[in-house]
Length: 95
Image 1 (cartoon, one colour):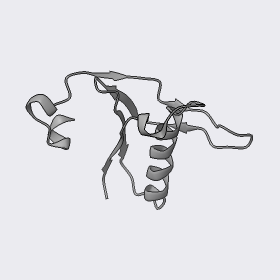
Image 2 (cartoon, rainbow, N blue to C red; image 1 turned 135 degrees about the horizontal axis):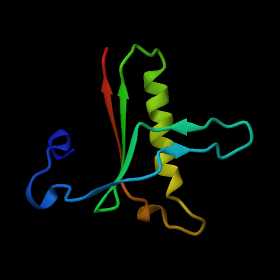
Image 3 (cartoon, one colour; image 1 turned 45 degrees about the vertical axis):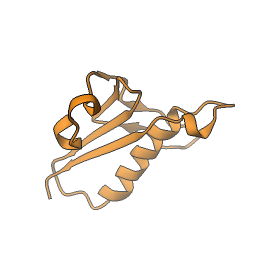
Image 4 (cartoon, rainbow, N blue to C red; image 1 turned 90 degrees about the vertical axis):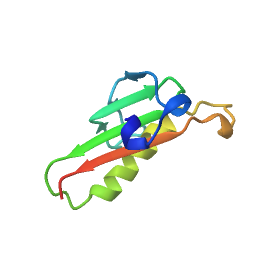
C-alpha cells in the first residue's frame, strides 16, 4: 500500500490490520456490502481495497457506495466531524 500511495519514511504506513469486511444494511431494505479487503492503518485511516476482475458497468457507483459505507461506519452520535479518520478506496480494475 505504501507503493500505491507513494508513502515513504515517516509518512509510510507501518502497520495494517485487516478487519471485518462485511457491511450490513443500516436500514430496512438496505443493501449489504462485502468489501474485498478492509484495513485500518496505524494512523486510524480506513482503507477499502477492491479488486474487479470482470467488466462491471456499475463500477463507479459501487465504489462510491462502498467508500461511503466505510467512512460513515466510524461516525458515532456526538462525534465531531473533524475527528473522522481519512478513508481511502483503492480499486484494482481489469478493464
